[in-house]
Amino acid sequence: MTVSASDLQAFYQNQRTSAGTAIEPTEQEIQQGFANGKNPDPLPKLFQPLKIRESVFKNRVWVSPMCMYSSEDGFSNDFHLTHYSQFAMRGAGLVMFEATGVLPEGRISPNCLGIWKDEHVANLSKTVKNIHQYGAVAGIQLSHSGRKGSSIPLALSKIRDSQRSTIEEGAWPDKVYGPSAIPFDDAHYKPSEMTLEQIDAVQNAFVDAALRADKAGFDVIELHGAHGYLLCQFLSPLSNQRTDNYGGSFENRTRMLIETVRRVRAVWPVEKPLFVRVSSTEWVEGGWDIDDSVALAKVLVNEGVDLVDCSSGGNNSRQKIAVGPGYQVPFAARIKQEVPDLLTGAVGLITRGDQANEILENGQADVVFIAREFLRNTSLVLSSAHKLGVNIKWPNQYERAHLKTKYKF
Image (cartoon, rainbow, N blue to C red; front, side, top):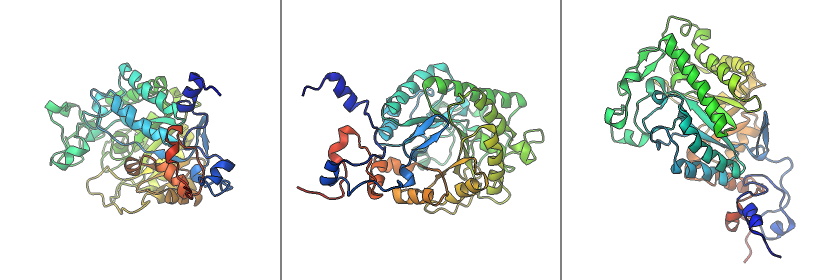
């Protein structure tokens, strides 16, 4: 039988079933040791597909947004193409791009990704198309750094005491702003308090960024309301001490985020999901806590938010975090229990497939976002399926490495 060039293209690139999708093993696969028998019924939840609006996620093992500090003037490049495509190629259900600045001064560092001008769209689109080619959903986290902006990349923080980038490195100390003129700590620039005009301009920037994200082909937007960046700064009474309609009461402190959500949802296509990442607690007495996050979630679900990504911390240098495996899972569970119409994502020291699946089976979250472990093991989806006894599609190119339940030579 002759195989045409177009058939080979379909086999290697446009694979009919994409990697990471649970499929029943054939008799040949069972005989050859790739599976002990049919897949479990029901499938472990980690490998059950999930539909949100019109986006279908083939599994619930998702790549969490992680800063890469590898851009110049906000542009994505060959690094991002390679970095994000590797997760899609190896079966991740969702690949979420890193915190992407909606304004130049909204970046965390001068090296962070951006989406504040139309010229950014083409390079982003190239990577999105590659992710889609491998059957994954492409997401982007839209962000503004606020008072934590003009910082240095993570690797430099190991060798420098100050977190401030320099003018020579592209810093913008005169454009660092936040809800109040309160610095994160002495190692960061002191922000100016935002005017009402600046608040409106930032919200407009999120809207413009959402429109560009749609043009680039992204399927999901996540608004970054966590880790002490601008939208998070407005939520906390410790970082927001304004006396106008954007400070003081819970309603006022959540106004910036809710207005931004409302304006983005209005332009983001109705068929595409909208997520929000929150710091469920500040881990500081008198700060934002899980009760506040539950109350916020009840508002967000009515504003068209589909999922809350439940992280924590990052807004106060005095935080005391009780770190351990799955330490943030109870936050996702609490919100899921009290706001049943809203999906939740669990994140934080989730490092194994069986651990991730247990979270879902226990009803503590609907999906898991995994960060560092994906950097250590880009084939995490494939190895997790093997350990859970689920036969999933491997990339055709990597079939030789397909894990077996038993080996015969």
